[in-house]
Amino acid sequence: MHELSVCLALMSQVSRIAREHDASGVERIVLNIGPLSGVEPALLRNAFPLAAAGTVAENAELTIEEMPVRVRCTICEAESQATPNRLLCAVCGDYRTRVVSGEEMTLTRLELVTADEFRHGGSGSDPSADARGLPT
Image 1: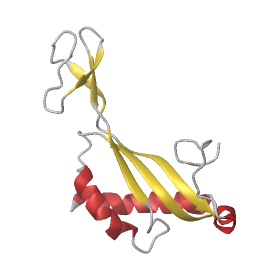
Image 2: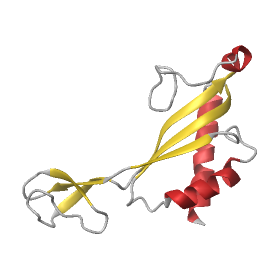
Image 3: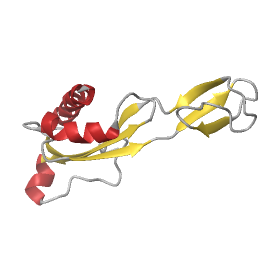
């Protein structure tokens, strides 16, 4: 299962970030996944508990936000949404387009539990956090 190896790589990245910020745990992991990424969200959700077992993210919630496919037309230069199997310009209908988004799988946010939050009963989420859920 390809998604298990993707989850194992994700856990490696999550564990590294948690160590860098002296986190005692991870509450939530948010991923953006495009339909052209080669990753099947449902299979990734199934593989996640296996990959997370015994890690700092063992009890984390995995949130997957599916991203649309967007293309830029090389003829009229318009950017528009497209379907994965029809990468046509929505403005002029031409087939000569470049994919702008929809191929990515991005770790967008981590909600970490730090030692201070654990001692004081905090939730680990911080409204002033950057894309990885880390204080700005």
